[in-house]
Length: 192
Image (cartoon, rainbow, N blue to C red; front, side, top):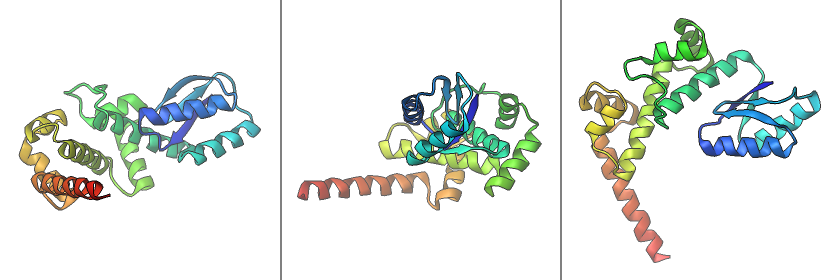
């Protein structure tokens, strides 16, 4: 039986879900971001327990097929952008990738995502890319050129423009703000 779960965004989430469901005596054959597959059917009593334990950990069991599809789209985008899993061939765009992975026409997926979330898939992808750039800037890991290349931007200018539209500041301004905040946190920690 396949269960769709909202808010699974990282490997730690997968571990928590696996541990909690196995703690309920449910054997699993698959644990992926956004879904698990059980060995046997889960009865109504177990399903209530699953919902309760998931909610206690910040997750949500999705009953609605449309909501499950939206969560699957989010999961695939997160895997590609935040975790840089590399499942999507570099020459394939996100619309083709999502259609291939999910098995629906992109126009259907796009309309469904927009109607359920209030934002387009493209806006969600850009937001995830900006989050990744913020992470890299905070840790001073890569140059802006390297970030643009890893996130498949045509240029650093394109990345900078999208970043500024979302954040209201350039990547350089964000980096300065982030470094200043870290310095202040360090000073504050030393005074304690």
